[in-house]
Amino acid sequence: MWSSFIADYILHSERLMLLCLLIDGRHPEMALDKVAFDWLVEAGVPLQIVVTKADKFTAKEKSANLAIIKELYPTATSPILYSSLKHTGRELLQQRINKILVGDEA
Image (tube, rainbow, N blue to C red; front, side):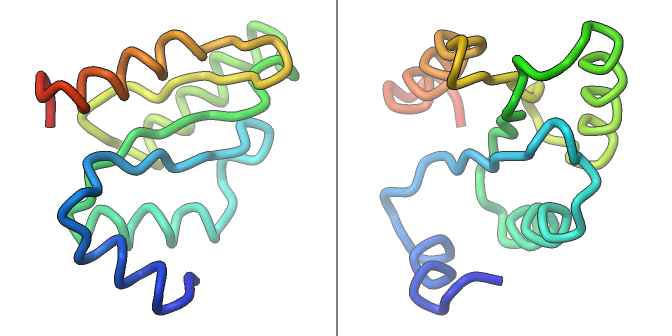
């Protein structure tokens, strides 16, 4: 899945406070994403699911895909819908990261 260098960093870094796992919202059931998620959860890595391509969905698709993502990738925090094109979710993701950096959350 990852090179041994990346895996070693993820598993042993004392500085890693949060890993954002990017899930393509158009294809939430990709096997590689699920393998990565399961490995990270098993390793105890603090995760934030970031659902990309949020600008590509209708409201109905967004709701349906978000339900699938919440079921397949359960974490302590809700997935963040993100669009780099329209900056949807940008502020929410920045707030999440800032909370981790100042120690309000683990």
